[in-house]
Length: 265
Image 1 (cartoon, rainbow, N blue to C red):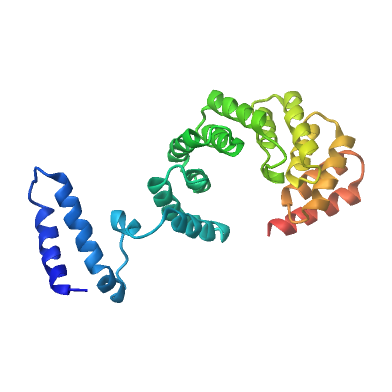
Image 2 (image 1 turned 45 degrees about the horizontal axis):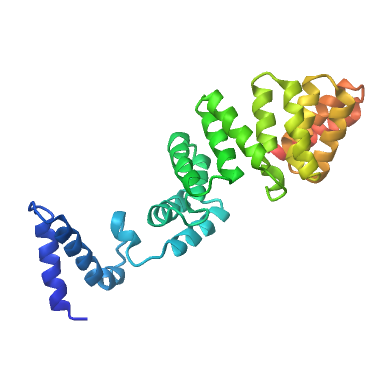
C-alpha cells in the first residue's frame, strides 16, 4: 500500500470534518478512504474502531455470528453491538433484527427492544417469536392491551418449531394470570403442553395457576413433573413444597422447600 496516499487522505478527512461541503458524498468518501488506509496501522496499535468505522469491511452475517457467540455465552452486553450493526447493514437478514431486539429485551431495555422488533416484523410478518418478544416488552412497559394483542398473534402463529420453554402459549398464559384471569390462562398453557409435553416451564406455570385455583392435586402433579424435568428450578421446588403442605404432607413439603432454598443459594 502507498502510505503517502494515506497521509493525504488523513489530512483531507480531518479537514472535511469541519468544512461545510456542497457535495456531502465527497466528505463521506474521504472519511471512508482514510479509514481504509489506516485500518492496518490502527490494528497494529490495538485501536478499537467504534461507530460507523466498526462495520467497514465486515459482512452482516459475520457480525450476526459474532453476536450469536456472545449471546450463547450469556454476554448480552457484548452481543448488542454486533447484532445492532448486522440489523442496520442488512435488516432483511434472517434473525438479525430479531436477535438484536431480543438482546435489548434481556438487557431490560424494553422501549428500544419494542422499536427494533417492529422493524424485524417488516421483514418477517409470520414469525411468532417476534410477536412473543413484543408482548413481553410491551408488558414490561405496562402497555397491557398491546402486550395482549402481541401474545395472541404469537399464539396463532405458533407451532412445534417453538422452543419448549419459550412457547408463546406459556407467556400468554402467564400474562392472563397476571391480569387476574386464572381460568382463561389455563387454555393457552394447555395448548403449549400439547405442543411440548416435556416443557418444564409449561408444567411449572400450569401448576402455579392450578394452585391459585385451589386445585391442589392437579397442581402437585404438574409441579412434580416440572421438578423432574428441571431439578435446578428453585421456584418449582418451592411451589411444590407449598402444595404438599396444603395437601397434608408435611415431610415431603418441607423437603421440597429445603430443596428450593438450596437451589436459590
